[in-house]
Image (cartoon, rainbow, N blue to C red; front, side):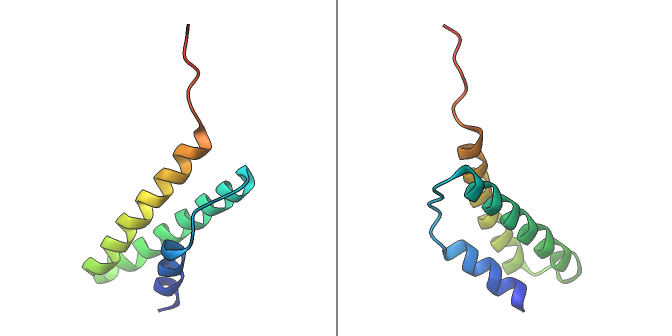
Length: 75
């Protein structure tokens, strides 16, 4: 299962992205992995796939939070 290996490799990779472009590419990559895993999960209902998707979703949320930046506060 090459997709599972790619997902685990992404999960274990360091998530220090220097540029906004790196963050955008990482966000798109993890989104693609999650959607692909979801298609497999729909047919197999394997709990380990669901756990992996949840962990990847947490990583994706952290990346996207960093992309959005801090909100401007009204003074």
